[in-house]
Image 1 (cartoon, rainbow, N blue to C red):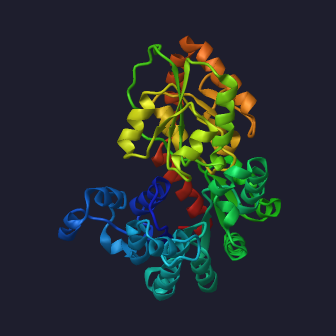
Image 2: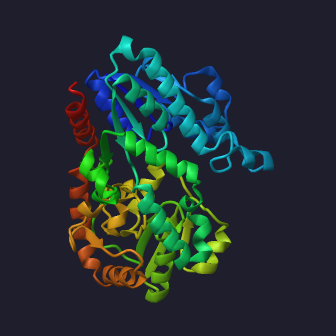
Image 3: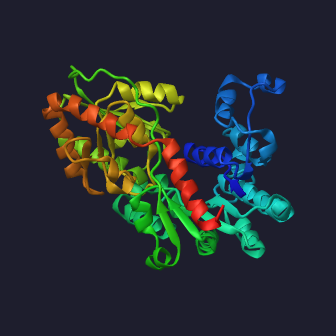
Length: 412
């Protein structure tokens, strides 16, 4: 039996959860919130908050869940007051994301210590920033330790982000990871040291691991699944080429380089659409690039609708794990222009499903975007090829690959 912990239940977490549940190997899922809109009190919440919480709904039995809701509820409800900002302050705030992660990790460790023998828990599956305490207890009790690393190893990420802070000093405040404390980085290092199996979503993440780690531990690359392919008409579009950037508006995702590329292109038949969460005021971004249409975050179905109205996704990321937005866009019929560091180099067949470009290269971005603008007749065929490639990667296959790796370690 396997103990799984994660505070938010992302799509990749749910795929592992479903695989364990269907194989009857799930001992307990430890998370922050488990939502049900059937609860009477839920109707008292604003619709926007209910929509946020609906993402935390699960199909597994409540008896299989251990919840740690307090900090996460406060984090979600926190507004813009001075007190609220203190509560969610990076690392130190009582309801910060870091403290939510740690509370779930402590709860998993406590559950393991109390129920390991009775429930025959043979392994712990935990994620970066949510593994140290449960892994410590697992080592003490002789349980196996599976570590899911959803983004590049912290040493690689820190190096790349510090270089970006030097390239674009004014964008440093959007990077986030440059502010991680020494204590947080030491915790990440201990988690990896305690791990026996490391699950990576991409070759980029695997290659970011220290060489000694790759030599000493079992490592597996399990690419994420895609959403269902969205039926789309692939006739040549009229009007400007619609170039989509989707994600947090930070230089970690290469947005400054994309803005620089748009200045190099300087043509009226190319339109940039930027959808994502603002990390600085919108006017701050406008000062750096006047020629883009801003689209705020929205429910997933509306994201897909926006994608279907565009022609190509551009993601010049500096540090990722495997950006799911790439497969979402491909499922909507969009080819990619992306870096290997976005974690989806296996998605790109050059000139067929998109183009790979080097990081930190506005010139190459401009070249490929201009090519798309000059070859509109080829874009429909590339969209069809992108959809086919996206359809080859399913969440079921992802869960089965992770499950096979778990079984090889635990003997379950």
